Image (tube, rainbow, N blue to C red; front, side, top):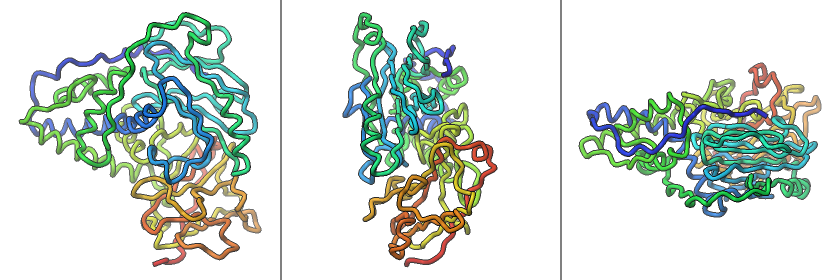
Amino acid sequence: MRHWLTALSLCLPLATAHAGMPSPAAAQQLAEEAYVFAYATAEHNKVLNAIAAKLPFNVLYNEPRLMGPEDNKVVSPNNDTFYSRALLDLRSEPQVLQVPAVEKRYYSFQLIDVRTNNLDYIGTRATGTAAGRYLIVGPAWKGELPAGFNGLIRSTSQLVFLLGRTEVKGQSDQAAAAEILKGYRLQALSSVLGQTVPAALPKLKLPTYRNSKDGQASDVFVTFNALAPLQAWTPAEQTQLSRFAEIGVGPGLDFNPPAAIAQAVASGAETGREKVKAASLSISPNHNGWFSSPANAGHFGSDDLTRAAAAWRYIYVNDPVEALYPIALQDAKGKPLNGNKAYRLHFAAGQLPPVDSFWSLTLYDAETQLFSANPLKRYSLGDRSPSLTYDADGGLTLLIQNSAPAQALQGNWLPAPKGPFNMILRLYLPQQKALQGAYQLPAIESVASQE
């Protein structure tokens, strides 16, 4: 377990923007840059609001069910694991996550800051299969790791999204997986140590969710300004924020640009949104129609365009060593995937995705980036799917189409909608040849029209 001992200082709210007002052209450029910078945080607020509406801060919610088409709060959810969620308010005191021994089953807890950085992990890869207790502290906390703890994670923000995933090995395994969830426990440090509870702080209020993909693009700045004071910004980020303050974008600012530049700011934000949307369609190099996970996933640094594109396409992407997420947007001929055609994905013998845990191919409606409802209620296929029939030589052929294939082939069928769709192949704990790019996924072949 890494110790995140950072010299970052929490960015205090800015009382006013810079006195000098930029020209309309400069304001438009600043708004475009600021949108790209702020988008991931604003999109993150969608999930923050959804959780906070149902669950108090610092309470862990374990959900023993697999997600389906009705789940619309997070783009590109998986259909492989049970999820656990908590919003950690670290302003008053640290929180402690306790986990049981989890053997012969993948699990992980991903810790995400307001910027959508991955802070660290607790789980199969990061901390092993033994039971443990882990201390999670905010950027202003000073202290030493108490005895009896297995690790410390220092957050770069006062608000942390704790996202847990626990593998489910098919329908018959759900009850056993649900038992694992009962062993996860979240407590305040004072409760664990039997100490006096710190004085209560005013309840943390999240900004109202505003749709960051539709509507007025500059609404992103209202959300960002409200969440930004919770983040400890690096010196380089603070330099950017000082520039954005000229148009009213920054920690604690009231976004209300002067009339003389308001239209320019709105136009710049719209341009920024189109830039992010376009980047989400080519988030990484194209290999056989597949776009691999960004190499800097979860640790984007100053690469704000990739950060924003990832948030648009599949927010909370894991570190590559934890999971890879190649996404398929087109077939072998470069044509967008569409349910008016039938497709074939063939893995040759010995060329199945190389993983130390498991892999899964999941299909999404291209318009919503959510599961596509179908009569089979089947949203993914993978190495744990009991329905699969392998080729005689050990290879595997998957069928992706809207209409049902012959009965004998339906075990390998991943139902598609009638319109545009895309797919993500998740590789949990990918092996080195996948991480190093030596393994290439086969192209998706169009085999027939279904018009």
